[in-house]
Structures are given as structure tokens and as C-alpha cells.
Amino acid sequence: MDHPTEREKMLRGELYRAFTPDLIAARSRCSRACRRFNSMEEVSRRRQVELWKDITEDTTPLPPMQESPEEDDALFENEPWVEPPIRMDYGFNVKLGEGVFINHNCVIIDTCVVSIGARTLFGPNVHLYSGTHPLDPALRNGTKGPETGKEIHIGEDCWLAGNVTVLPGVTIGKGAVIGAGSVVTK
Image (cartoon, rainbow, N blue to C red; front, side, top):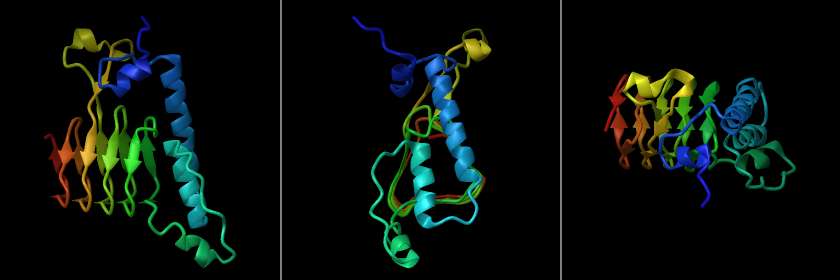
């Protein structure tokens, strides 16, 4: 019988070890992709979407390039709009719906799936934490101890104002408004 990998345990929300070579490499890959995205200057909408897909490991091909910049930009009008800088741990667990807007300084700890529904808006400095640590310090044990997580789901047409923090395991229903500075625990 095969034993689950640390990544498989992480994705299931079980206790897992984050400082294994494969998970360290996955975080490093995402960190490099975030740096490329965050350092983009004046680039086309196509390039913005391409850099975002690199962060999230979305391999869906982009549509063929159009002749005029305006026509090409129109191809991406339903793609999420993300203002840099943004920071994530893995990227592959982040799922954004059409027309999502994420303002600058967003942090997503995507130990488990973090899904954001279509047309949802984030103010600046929104933080989503799907990862957590054991409360018992003996078990927690710094980088040698296990971690865990719970999925976060944010419905369609929501607005999370500036400086909102969402904790592991939270589901925010369709159309909700979360006031500035809120900490959403359940």
C-alpha cells in the first residue's frame, strides 16, 4: 500500500510536513513567478494574463493574438484582473472566476484550495490564509513540525474591502460584503 506524499496530505487538509524537497521547490517556483508578475511594468493585457497563468500553473492556451492591440485586449476582458504586488505560497491551489479584481498587496496562503467566485472584488491588503499550524507548541515544533489547512471558498459577486483577513475553512456566500479591517473566522 502506497503512503501518501506530503503534498497529497497537504491538499487533503491533513497534517503534513512543508519542508520537504518537493514542497520547498513548489514554493520557490511560485515565488519566482510572483516576482516576475510583480516586476512587470507597462505590458499588454495578454502578457499580464500570461504571467498570472504562470503563477497558478494554468496551462489553458491563450487565444490567438489579434492584429490590433485593442482587439487583442478584448479577448481578455473576462480574465481576472490582479494588481501587483501579490504573494502566494503555491499558486496551483488558487482558482479565480471571471471578472475577479484583486487589488495590490494581496497575500494568499494556498495550502489548500482557495476559490474566488466571478465578479468578486478585493480591496488592497486582503489576506487569505488556508494554512494553519497546530496549537500545541510541542507538536508545532517550528520547521520540523507539521502544518495543516482548510479550503477557503468565496462566492460570486462579493466585495472584500481593504485589510480583510480570511482564515482557514471559511466559506463566504454569494453577494457578501466584508467591511474594511474585518477578520473572517467562520
